[in-house]
Amino acid sequence: MVQRDYAGDGIVVHWDSTICMHSARCFGALPSVFRPSDKPWVQFGETGADAVAAAIDLCPSGALRYTRTSPGTPSDQSDQSDRPDPSDQLEENPAMTAEPGTADPAAPAPAKLTVYADGPNVLVGAVEIRNGAGELIKTVERVSLCRCGHSENKPFCDGSHKRVGFTDPGPTVPEAQ
Image (cartoon, rainbow, N blue to C red):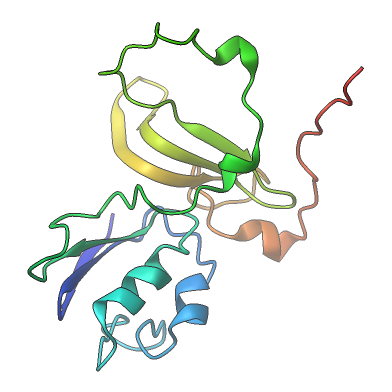
């Protein structure tokens, strides 16, 4: 398990290689900062913390997180709870929604699962990953899980679906009667 922290001006980037799916969205967003062929691979240069945070918010696997360190900013945004959630576009299942006024306000929000066409399952929310013996592997706020069966880092997606040409549109929503 490789976890690294990279400190920049006003931000610390946290990277967890065990859940990285190598989507290259970080590199695509900020190639001057995220340089996979360099050591260290995160190099801030003159790039501001806001730009780095915006690039990290694009990470589909949750392998990249950040903590703000500048005065006047939230001290910890490592969960990126304000990150756009792709599962917001899904309609809620009425059977899973509590009646108004009956939900426990102290209960954590349920995790949301989005099945990406030709790609992974992405879980957003408080998620515990456990092995077959029930032992906790890790707790995450966002994770991409393999759907193609070819990941060399199961249960996590490592991007193998692209290499093997995995195709599956995912679940379909039944038409309203």
